Image (cartoon, rainbow, N blue to C red; front, side):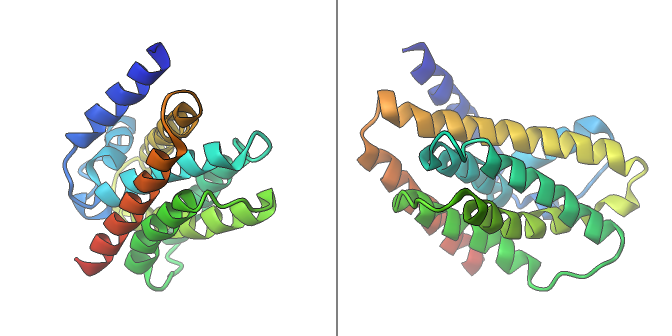
Amino acid sequence: MKFLSVVVTGWFTLLFTQTAFAHTFGAEGASFYQGFIHPLFGLDHLLAMLAVGIWAAQAGVRARWLIPAAFLAMLALGGGMAMLGWPLPQVELGIAGSVVVFGLLIAGAAKMPPWLSMSVVGLFALFHGHAHGAEMPQAAMPWLYASGFLLTSAMLHGLGMLTGLAHQYQWPTRLLRLGGIGLAAAGVWLLAV
């Protein structure tokens, strides 16, 4: 029961975040705190981070930590690419598309070899990182900002993972798969706006 209440409380908190896109919210400062709260104000990033955690929980023990770790590493690489001025085409499409793809992977309870799962999340993480890294050079302390941003992203992965694991103990698998369909639908909506 305690496990379920942690998951429900986490989701309840996230339901009341502002639904603006994180990469249009802007980096008003580059402090650790600004980077830490930035992912919580963008629906696209928020959903993608939670979805990565949920899918990692579904992937099994072997890949459970590899998938979020690959996402975070490539998120940092994408941010670094943007800070160096290296272009990445179709960033917005990649970000919204990640929510669709991750939702479908959850809905289908997709099982892949760990290297392939890591490649899929890593590709989409480049887009997320690039979008946020493009904002950071204007800020005074980009490395502090990036550290906060990565920490919050990891925490959101953890909340998604708790959600994915909760279905094993509390919720029917069907509910988790319906959640994946809802994530994919939200991604389609993000593509449309």
